[in-house]
Image 1: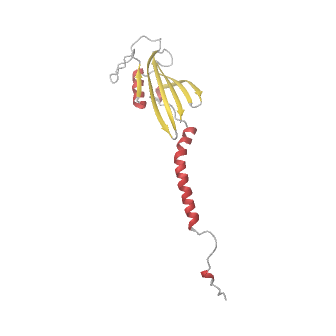
Image 2: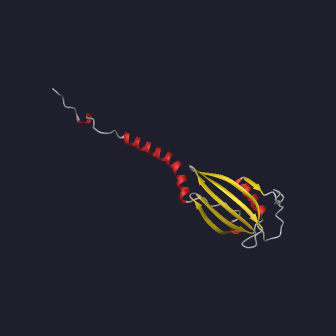
Image 3: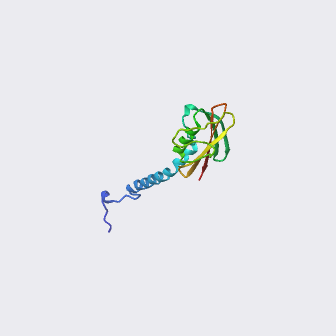
Length: 162
């Protein structure tokens, strides 16, 4: 004959209490790993990086244009010296090429010395910034000798690629 077992000795059927806790811990770890890769990219899509500017109060936006998917361009005017602007972008972006006809001796403060009216290219600076799974390439063309809206113009291009 079968002997009845007391209720305290009966095992309850179902999932043990620790199993859902382990499942939630694994799900949390997975969410952290995926989120660490997704959130920087999502943040850059919602709030794209703005162009680096020397001194915001001394720079005026003249024109902006969306050149295509992932490519934008801004034109700024300023009264700052073109060689000082080039040195600023050399510090920020790193790779700058000066126009050979312009006397911007790096570190000496010597500027462009010509009569005003005919735009003169000063140089081009380029740099890369990594945001999540994407990279942002910045290109800054600096020209000077303008009469209106500041003597120096900055054409800043931002290109986003993966």
